[in-house]
Length: 187
Image (cartoon, helix red, strand yellow):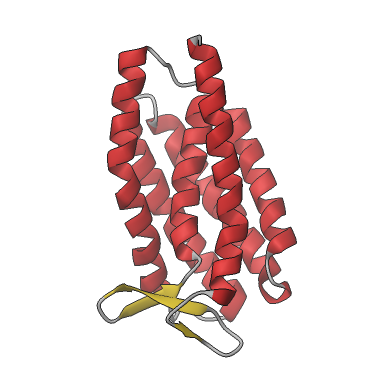
């Protein structure tokens, strides 16, 4: 298999996984947690004494996967993934959180894109870390404020999403090393 085909196939796989994180996050927030707040989210512990809506786990992963989509398929595909993701988010989110879900998704992914794009050629892993961390803060603030009119779960949201990013960073390092070994260039 030639390098361009391999890069394209890996990009499509990352795009599909990225798209799947969105409905999964929306489903988790209403159905999975150690406690479900009446007329609110289901919560999971993310640190001792700290909880967050369960969808945070998938959102942290979505930020990383979008960076991989851009690395494999290019910035236009990265922006297209953001647009499709916002649409999926709006179509699948519970009615009470559609606006919050779409706005948070769109703003956080565009922030991720804006930070990742200039950094990625100099240091891929640092670009993923920085863009994801900034994106997850934006996502957390926008979503919580619009969905619940409160930032009560902000610390938990940030910690929960950050866990997923931190877990992904060693894999991003391995991906970069593999790319170098195979001669796969970023799109």
